[in-house]
Length: 150
Image (cartoon, rainbow, N blue to C red; front, side, top):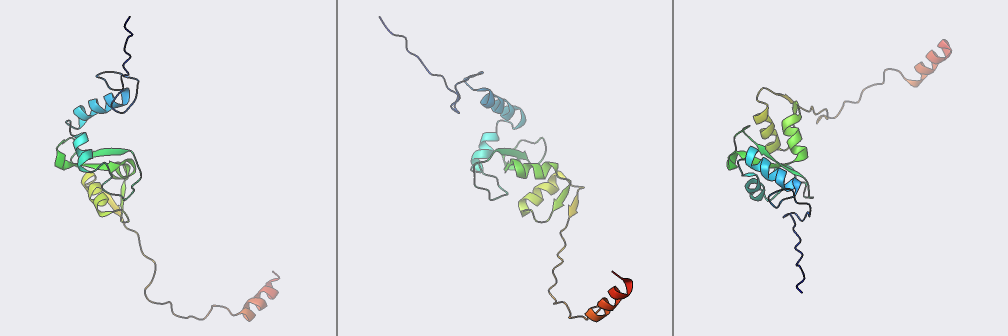
């Protein structure tokens, strides 16, 4: 008598719960979104950018988004890989901050052509402060305190 072979059917990510087309629900959704929103180029963009955010130097494993530099246009040269934090800065912030990396500032300006840029003022002076006389010396303060009864 022959024994039946058991085949383990796994998604390419290793998940054993298959939804459709041999993919789990997460991979199936990503594949559908890739075709619908990215013209099938999402994986190519991620591979080109070595699956790293192009704007920050955060090397730990992180969730990534593929950003359209021109909204709705799915061309390989017009899409870029960003981590979710940098993608949120580009798409959701109302003011550009000048301490962001240059590429992030460029992407923000592309998304917000009429946006406002916020500049950080530097209050540190290169000129040393002049030595000044105090407004009151200790004797005057003591005399005022005694007179007012504090």
